[in-house]
Image 1: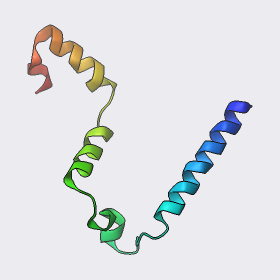
Image 2: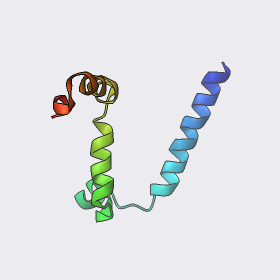
Image 3: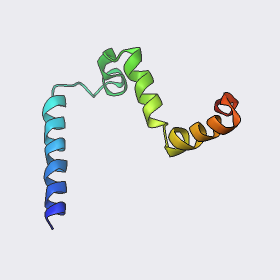
Image 4: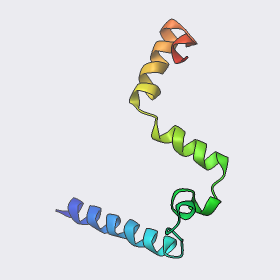
Amino acid sequence: MTTLITFLFFTALVGLLTRLMTRQDDRRTTTGYFLAGRTLTGGFIAGSLLLTNLSTEQLVGLNGQAFTEGIAVMA
């Protein structure tokens, strides 16, 4: 029961903080909604694309296979 209460508390806290931090954003236009008002740099965009596509297969499986068979499996 304590785990559930803690989970709900922190989920609500993250939601509240997110709302407070983004309440001034203009999300009525496509520029404001999709591109964060054009304030994101290439590093943030590339990092988000990279990190959302990583999985256990890339982190463990391909690295182990590259060690045993050579780095060519990564390509």
